[in-house]
Length: 446
Image (cartoon, rainbow, N blue to C red):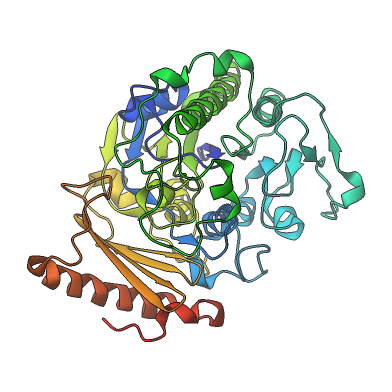
């Protein structure tokens, strides 16, 4: 019986969908991410479902690791209850050794259920990249605070990828492995080695077409932590510096991905390893006058997703609508493992095989403030802030930067009504009726 393929999963923090050179961004250098694009299949319309708290990465990572939808998590994903079977648990049961390193934002108990091995584990959301408080792998699963320590002066991307490369180089087990490499980059503080900053001169950075000095209305989160990282109104030169630093961190993370991929080649494991790369959410950095990820605009919910390896077509781009939570059942199908009943995601294997099978629409939500739905062409965003509703309707085919609000156009009222009906259907299907989010729907009709 042939051994199942290994799985190597790179997961970055705050990396937006349009930050790969190989997918159309000429300003950024990402040779290793580009190599995966050329060697595998990229999903141009991959999204997260949104977030139920300002730390959007916490529910995003919980959805990824459980394959569950936003309102079927336990609270915001601080922990994962036993009845929600984790990806690592499923692969362990199927005979995989499971290794994790880097950021884990969903509690120590869920980590212990997921992994048989690990190193330099960061239980938290953000920190100084040069002084990350990490824990060694603890077979007991306790991970007490007293066991945390720092690799002083070692950047988080170097640390986590170094641990993953060491695990691969020293691997001597006949079982296949699942290695999860979870970056803190390019989350702020946006600091890395000077040689990467030197690659990006802020004066030569282009502002995005939808740059604004301020958001056009109160979205309920204009002073959340992320928004305070730049001054008000937004200054174009300051935003260019932020983008340059963002790109520098991504290029550094890319280089460290190359270190891990080289370790696979050195061990002769590259050809029998499924390699995934994705980001946990996007980031505005000046778009729509925002800085963070606390919105339903594409810059906040649209993420990169690339898969390469056995069973995955080479050089293919799929534009099917999908979620990160679809990765879990997709991996199960790729390695012939049964998908647990607790998983709600949709396997992308049919899309990988034909690039035709996908979702008709996607839902997005943020706290009790924003809800959105998108089809292939159209996107509706609804806001309810202090009882005041604001509606946006975008034609993504002709307005991909979401700049021209068509909600008040008489000729678009039929489209608006259809999308509102879709939004209400999604609400029913997802169980978007938790008390914390109920304020949004008060008085809302389709």
